[in-house]
Image (cartoon, rainbow, N blue to C red; front, side, top):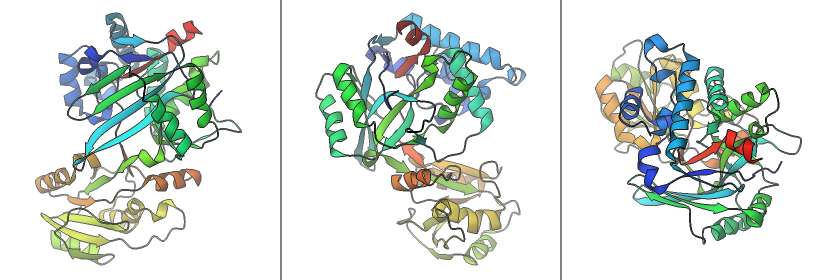
Length: 410
């Protein structure tokens, strides 16, 4: 199987974009999802519902939940909201978003990648997954028989790949859609051009940047498949060259279980770190974070780690080692009840507003770069929870891979 192959894809029709497509599932609160799905039966959030969206008395009705998701997907098929392409195709996908007063643009290739590692092929990972989450996603994939949110991958860029992708954008797109948050443009690539494009990534190492749970779910679905169902041998992915990736941080907020005063906390932090008052709310370099406490910002220089692996040298790990664990008692940042993560796109103002409201302590992080992520993956290490926030995230419901249709075409 090639590393990136075409599929008979479905692309949302332009007139249905606003009604159907959504941001990522976890970009909404349960309350927001409830309002959207109750008011709009065409929203793709009806297809991606999870336990959080169920009333208390139905929390254990997994089968009912998944059947409802399938009905929502079937409703979209019957309403004919998608353009259909029977010939296996790759799709060049460009996303433009506003960022820091400018426009960030990245262009990648949407196709299928193998689910199983082989001796000559491997997709490198850097993040641990929660089995209960990947299990539900696996069952969702098998029941709904469709996927829409591609796993995000990256690879090392080269001029030949960049030129080939750009050449594809000289043709007429099959979709152009734009709103205040994002512009999306899609070009279909088939036949010999698709084969040549696939060949250009055949010798490249691929790295997951977003979608570890989706990959784990695809692996589990294949493992449990009785007939080694061919569509389950691959999964939907989008591959962006590394030089176009935008990496933002996850900022941290922590509550103090001991209810110490601001001065007591500052003294404790100053005992292990160099800190000074600052008018800046953004750290300028690696090894530096901005502490926000009692409506005042402080520049904090993190001590070097006592560890000797790559992950231990990252700012998120150094903050955890020297401050969050010993001072705030955050032993497991993935499950601790008094820690809150603020995605980079929400901005520093959200950190400040929340801290001013609940009197928690904010830590504004400097972003990792894509090389950090790739180096960690190559070393076989795992990042701490919420180490990076990759932008932009493809909209749900734009692409659909219909496994049942794919089986019939084959």
